[in-house]
Image (cartoon, rainbow, N blue to C red; front, side, top):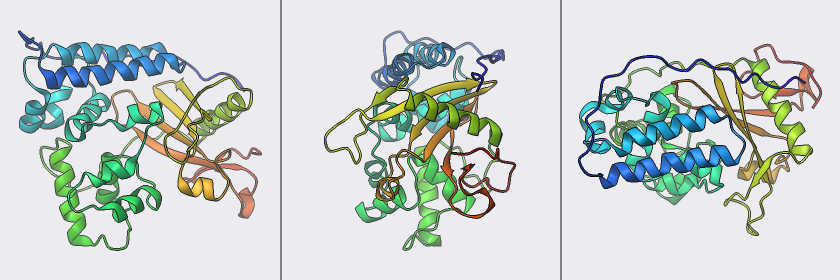
Length: 303
């Protein structure tokens, strides 16, 4: 299979000048440090240098800001962040998550430290039981995942009724720096199924050949073994990160070497996620398919 293309067109939009801080602001310095840590991990895991440079540029901007990031979010929402140099929609979302929770799911994922249950327990009204079900049954990883599931109507957890969903949506809107609640879900661009299957194939081939950096996930890994390969790739305007699934269900069904979770992000867009599996039923049995997009044209290739 040919290597994925590695060309992209950077954003050339001109943004307004920012006011530099006369002395560092602790909140901003902390966020900048996380952005730089993320860039360092991208480099160490073989990601394309363009993406790492983008996060370092954003870190430089954040560290020099005169206003606290939390103040910008509170008064202007994410639009206030996107108006800053070097900060697009995706990085603005990361900053909002860090300010709201002190954590960043993308960074924790690359470190193997992802613990979504702890994140969900930080939401008022969500105790250990619901946090566990949001992570394992609904397969959610971040506050943005939860917010999107609420707005799209995709969240179906027993005990979380209409009133509680409204309260959760309002809480998330405030914590994630929304100026106002969205009344309808915003459509997110999706990479073609064929492109996702290319990434899936590349990941499994490189993992089998031992060519990928491995991380030691914190969940379901009592011995702390570095067993989980990670792939970073680019195709046109898309960035991809792929892992074998490390969910409770994947372990219970012995699918940790079959199910591949692919995170994708177009330039200036929020991150999305899909899972590629080997179909076990119907005319596509034995073929790789993108879950949730079975009705679209899939490459009929064997697993």
